[in-house]
Image (cartoon, rainbow, N blue to C red; front, side):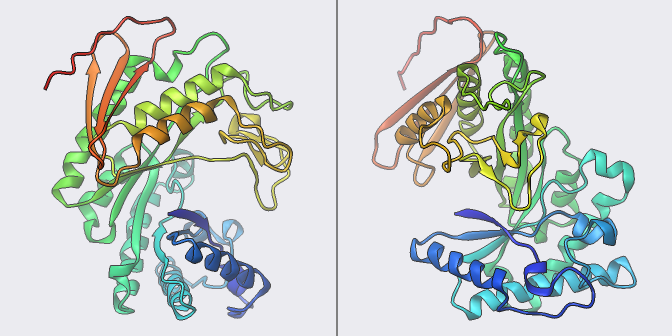
Length: 366
């Protein structure tokens, strides 16, 4: 499964005076890519840009083609147009387009300051899209994933569970560790912080499981610290960054009950129409350097964290048919998980969150 950015302006242009062109140059390119995914039996989940497209005014919108005289009308037009996107893709045989991320980090705290009603508006948008997909007869084959929101704030996640459970097939959250100053690997990965993250996830899993919902960490990774080490303007590959990235990956993916986890991102990449530098956010000259693989246009030599993550993936075998067992070693800053794979083999994963070596004895008796 892959996540795909999808901009409505590829179909209708940028303003109200546009018209629907489902064979535009951008859409032709998109169809070609969709066919490549279908040929490889890869499902595609569309990500229709940010919530500002619908809620924050015309200046922030990806396109104003669907803009109405009221918020409600705008939402209804948007829901109808997104539903039409899925119908058009199906008409071309792309049944592998079978889900939608309902925006990226909607109602983020900084955005809430500009519009305190963003969370309520998000629920309105979800209900409207759900209704349009249902009326078109394709709701059962189009998964809605949301709210795709930072896990440190659970308010919108709770709203989705309590106010619109029928609108979400997958509930999701984001979690990022933070790279500290060089020489201090503890930072966000200190045992008490990681324990708190586990507690949060376990608490919410109870609610989701009660409703038969899947729970994904649809974004996770490691941000840079004050020194931006690991993605500086020289882009050096730093072992501290690699160690922490791998440790964080292990911790997050070992939580029993999480149905899916998506790292952000696999390779450093140049975002379309992006040329700026913002090292705190991971960008240098338009290239997002959050990957554990480099910008492949410049080098094919992997970063340090690639080796730890690929080794982990090799011996965990995905989640299909696996049983995950998790335990936390109190006061030692060590997490232990075991997986019984579909073929009957076992994998044990030990993650040391401490700066120093830790002596640990495992009892493998049943």
